[in-house]
Length: 469
Image 1 (spheres, one colour):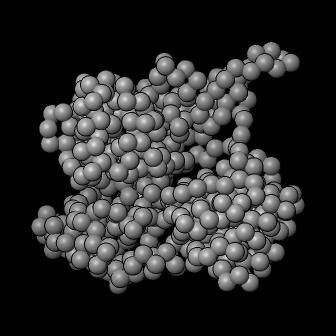
Image 2 (cartoon, rainbow, N blue to C red):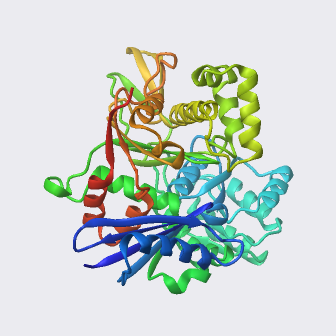
């Protein structure tokens, strides 16, 4: 046996996963409350004791970790044009596993500066202009950032003709500055990987220490990364595989939903190319592996956001409750975020919230289309990814994985195409695969060292619940 331990320091719970590399199998999982306010090792040790009760004592040959504790990786980004460099900056941050607090376009104002100081990001991503293009915007924003109090580092990934001048402005103001390649070196050309690599380096070198996670460093043999980045890595491996044929073959195009207490994360693994003929693409090209975060919708801390986004009537109707009772239950879980669905009413309300979180989240994530008229006749314009051919949806998150297969299928169906949103490019039909053991972040970590084993374990452990309906 060759046991490996994966650790996920979550905002609420520290989750541990043990696998046997030789047997290419899952040995066990466990979780305990994350003690980030005191000593994070306490929560880790509690989780390890629970895991040992299941697996017996193991002599781990390596320990890998990821974290979303203490708010995760919190970022702010700025660019020139909302649909171009600002969007490229946002995609770079999300793909790196960050929670994007705000994205600014054009020149930063005094009000923006005050907001940035109040939000106190872990990293500020400064972009703007293609290489050799507009320099004024990014230079002006560098000057504004130089005047903001705070210890956050600034990652410059904009017009290379202005990058060094921006670096000088910010360095003279006492800021930690890192320069990398432009996220959009040419018009409509994405180059987000270098920025994502630098974000990860900053996370390792600085953010871990700032959040107290370095206390656990002596227990970890390798790699600390944001938990969402680990999940994204797992999803991409599951989709692409390690080989074209045999056991290394991936599952192909897929989507994933993770409904948490505060946010809803949506992932898609597909190029999202148009399915309809005579379709033109508007906006930036989409990355194959895409993640979006809906910070306003979640099962407890952001439950009110679900009701606001979906509509009180829709949530009430789906839960089988009148609107007054729905609002009463909303107040209950908002005031007590640890409240579990311990009554039939609350259970129905929880299922309605999860369904609407998925519906809203996937609607925002998926692309849209509209009819346009060209000199060549009628055509379609597509913005974002076409997910209509995606035929697998991975379900994770505590609010979902503990439901019955029938309930999960019904909840997952809200990720599919809805005739009431005819312009949405959501999946048409999909098989539901459930992360029952909550292993995706662990497999993302394992994939950095042993991708073949991670892929085989995911294929074994993800449980099919049939077709969403």
